[in-house]
Image (cartoon, rainbow, N blue to C red; front, side):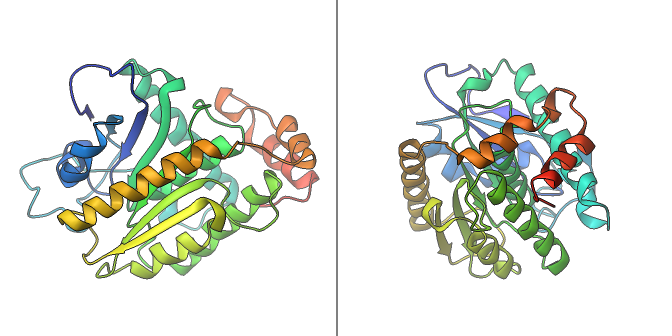
Length: 282
């Protein structure tokens, strides 16, 4: 893992950078070079390695053959497991990220955004979702940026994500079935999984979502015009998320207050049971 710069930028909010499956923080630092160069004027960018070693991901070789060490965030996504196990994995990832940030001396209160690519984009949205559910170490997390988000065309996985988003929507009292966090999406029109990215964007609340297309494949925007548009999108979402207060309806507040703190060791089965009592299922 690495940070853009060698010192903690105490006066700047932290944006956590999450690479795609089969990549690394070092590779992602190069893949995001043009975007990160500008974002680092506003944010303290912190790049993290995912916890699980794996084979190189799409597009990584041969370009990054000289940068060994490839990792992934999600493992259950490839297997038919219970919803409880999928949610448990997300909590494990949240604990892992929390620990990695702590080792770098990052104040949790400074974490205001996540920026993820491909599988990392799904994790970025999940971390924001945990914040919405009151199950996060980052109380000031406001928005996330999802670049090339997708499941490589797996319809069952997309359906599972949509179901989890609907659960979260009910939990925070929106009732529209949409992901309630502030999200900025960008998808390449030549991306093999373009449809995934567009569909995921439509699963998000329209009043809290912005999106853009760019003429490229499954890569982070790199053309000057695309980078400029992405930076404007992120700036707009930053400002939009600041103006929108985090709130829930009274009915959903009762649910949130009844949930055990899973991050602090609370039982996830108990948390799922509480949700079921209120008619919220995953």
